[in-house]
Image (tube, rainbow, N blue to C red; front, side, top):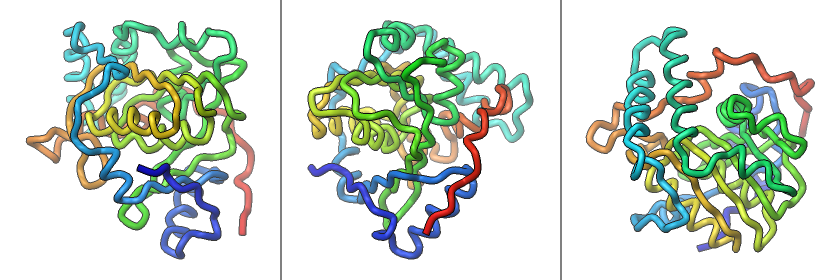
Length: 271
């Protein structure tokens, strides 16, 4: 297995360049890093396997996690979400974080720790959990885009310098590619990372564990529940009902409940 390729913008084919431009315009940002996971790499990362001990699943010992996940799935599949529905959804996610055996706040407070909470859901959840503000906290955009049968991850310039200790707070792990890209961009070999998330597919959890080994870093994934499978668009769905999403778009669901993030300034022009 090889690592994903860090691409220069000039290497993109016209259709891929158009896709990147569209994502940048939509999110009002500029991707200073482009990390490409080709189809063969994704296939190897998502191959069936047994979850290692470094993937710690809270629902194996806390039945309340399953109850909260049922609430999240029910809201995600509503034809229309009211404010009360969004509030129940956010409360369920925060409850799941509270049921993790190790709390993100505790890990983030260790000396020398860099915290990454990706926009939007990671940043919102980290703020609600008291992990941000943090003097070494970063909230980059990290967006996956379909390119050439694989996935291209665009990460903007809000990234720390290489670190030896990293804590990541994010809402869910579907394919895992956005988090794998950030591990690749921020960690030195021998570093230690902890990821805190409410839910993961088995493919995503396995991919993170395998990729950390590839990068020669130590990774612990603290996750509320592992279930579902990836569909053709790399969303987490019910295996027996691919039309039913497990969480939907977490950022779209909870962002109306929280103040907008301070503007980052005008989008930069580029060649």
